[in-house]
Length: 319
Ligand SMILES: [Fe+2]
Ligand SMILES: [Fe+2]
Image 1 (cartoon, rainbow, N blue to C red):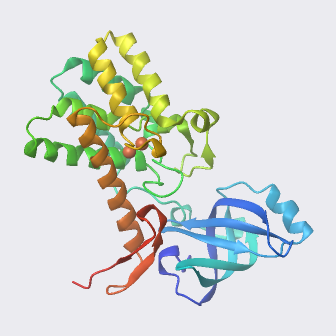
Image 2 (image 1 turned 180 degrees about the vertical axis):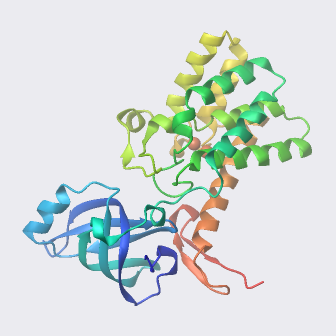
Image 3 (image 1 turned 120 degrees about the vertical axis):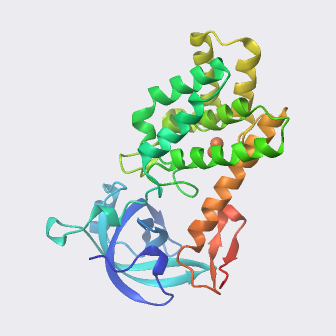
């Protein structure tokens, strides 16, 4: 039975337990010796881990190790510049007799993928604009298999089983509320933007069926989900005979949703639905990271530094 989870590791303690290797790199240390730089994860989260001073046999083994495998580690919890880090002293691969339970290792969105898919598709089917309805329906039906398990990221926000559906679903809920307040917004256009804004994460990042991503695809590295998304929307609009203006607006929503050139958007939003789309995306990503960071924190305490939140350490209130 797994006892130590990434969210309840206490500073200074030494323990033995199983984790999944989310990423691993062999790097050269300042002493000239090589070390293993890893992210270990389980169903509750992830933690950086280092195994120092590798010998030749370890280097040969870890060079061939792929992310996704489960290992038993002996490690000490240390603090490195405000962030918990594991100093691993022993590590071996899990064996059949260990009786590890896969559910302990894979982080999953808290809702059922089929229910989230049905919720999103239900909203799409309710669009009064037939072009937006047809476009979104086509993209969701064609990609249903992958949507059921895909994460929305490699790490950080919604890097979990069915995380992309969870992200889109909560943005849709939020988007509907925004339309009640800002009545100038086209609900169909905003929700269509929500539905498609990250759809090409399905080809940008790689993922196994547990929603664990080993990295980016070739296309993902070279183009990214914004440019890939524009291509898909362009092709789909042509296929479905959707008019010029609508196509351009949808493409614009995809390429502007990261807002800043530094984050991959060549254009800032140029109409209200595109502007709101960006903020829905931001709110949902930040709320996810905040919930995640506070999950294992005791009331009245502070969490680890979160780099996606400008290295803030969040406080967990006591009431
Ligand atoms: Fe995005
Ligand atoms: Fe997003």
